[in-house]
Amino acid sequence: MFYNIDYLIFMMPALLICMAAQMHIQSTFSRYSRVHGARGLTGAQAARRILDHSGLGFVQVEQVAGTLSDHYDPRTKVVRLSSATYGQTSVAALGVAAHEVGHAIQHAAGYAPLNLRNAIIPVTRIGSQLSVPLILLGLILALPGLVSVGIAAFSLLVLFQLITLPVEYNASRRAIAHLESMDILYGEELIGAKKVLSAAALTYVAALLQSLTQLIYYTSRFGGRRRR
Image (cartoon, rainbow, N blue to C red; front, side):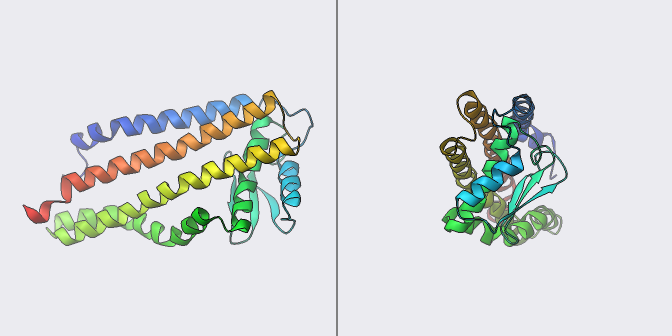
């Protein structure tokens, strides 16, 4: 009734694109993890230099476990770099580290899309957790209103992912600009960092496409039941 062969067929193109995007970022990151910056800076050192250059000496840089688990925490003002980035001197590590610093710079500058994304995170989390159960419960109990609430809740996730796109692309632009202007990377190294960040950005585009496709399915399949 809810997930069936029609759903799988409808979602298949978006799922394949997501898989391709994930494979692309993993292969690109792996490739440029073997290319090391001539200056010998680690991801942590590059992050620290860009932060200090941008007047953000109060923002800390910490190491976290995992690969591609890098992120900036606006609540604690900490740039957290994965073990594949923190102590590594590769072009991939430097690009990712600079990207996360880009988010810290956005935060300090009051970048509007980032502020909006951070503001709706709590609501988005609730919506993403409750949307499918609400839709399913509404179908079981024959309550079209509950189905509509579930679909609306899921749409918050789509909105969050839509807002995420300019945030991520802007952070990458800031990263490349600092890597270049501060001579942390240059020439082919800089091109490699751009490729890594472009591949990472594609994963956000693919995730949005998947969620948008799922929202269209829910809306077309269940959204009009009140009128029938």
